[in-house]
Length: 228
Image (cartoon, rainbow, N blue to C red; front, side):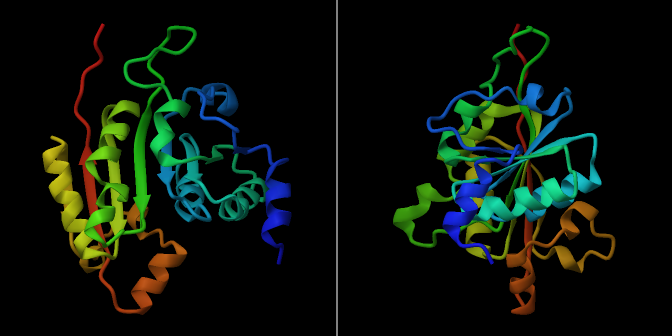
């Protein structure tokens, strides 16, 4: 098992990992070599969702984002070994997202369209249960406003969590932020025809299910128009 220092050294040469010393715009279209939709997994850890979604949807691009380089190492290595060319990883703070992606309604260099994200996945984030840490929750108003800047018109935010308090909090902040709630499910595994995207299980989800916890799902939609 490689230690953290070994992993940090190795990801520096991984072609699918970006870790800028300062937040800056990255030409994602150039990296992927196409104009396919881009989907983010935030606080991705080992990138379980990033990798599985990339296998399901080869004509979409996926970026796993986490501040922990040792975690990204595993997902990036797996993506390279499996030759998943529609996968990349970004080592960055989530509060800086709009610096790495075009803020609405910025145009790309060719002026051919808006460079925006089509979907965001937030899977089993730290619930930060203490009230004083609420602003650190990835579904707080602070972060929802950041997502609004980089999501395409009608872009989607997905949340999966085992924490009912975080789930209820997220519903409340979504309403406050004027987002459209498309789906709200307090126990996804009661559905016999579960959407394949929701059947993907991260390491943490497997642990939660073994402990008998229910898995909650929330799908939100951003509504905005491109101004000419």
